[in-house]
Length: 147
Ligand SMILES: [Zn+2]
View 1: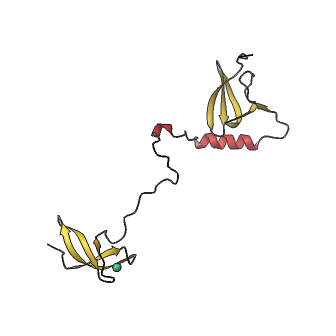
View 2: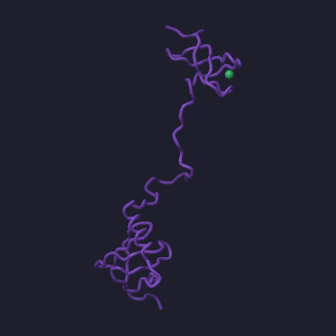
View 3: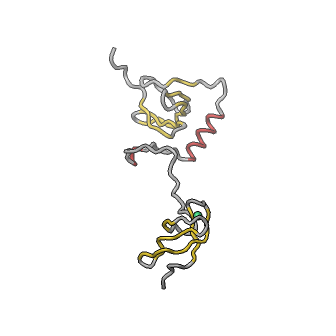
């Protein structure tokens, strides 16, 4: 059953409204060409409303491999960091992170790139620190190199 010549509701790009159109032609049984009865524009049939576009991230770097995306912080870790950060009082010593220093569980430190961190545990080769950007294994107590 052909709809050619029949009325159909279609979105008119010129009128920016869903309006009555006349079907001009069909392809494979599907309405493809329509004419707006309001403005007379002949155009492709887009359906009664424009297709919903998939939301595109505001910032998208081209050529970036999916694996190169920054790791997201687990919400529980972020909450824990927020809570610990809020609990810091002025008398708490915040150490600068240095590879050669030795830290203990419960120490608070500041890393040049990761920011404030809380030493959660000491491991055989370093420590595990909770930063605002997530938990990281950090080296410590390393001998001075170079000079
Ligand atoms: Zn129109």
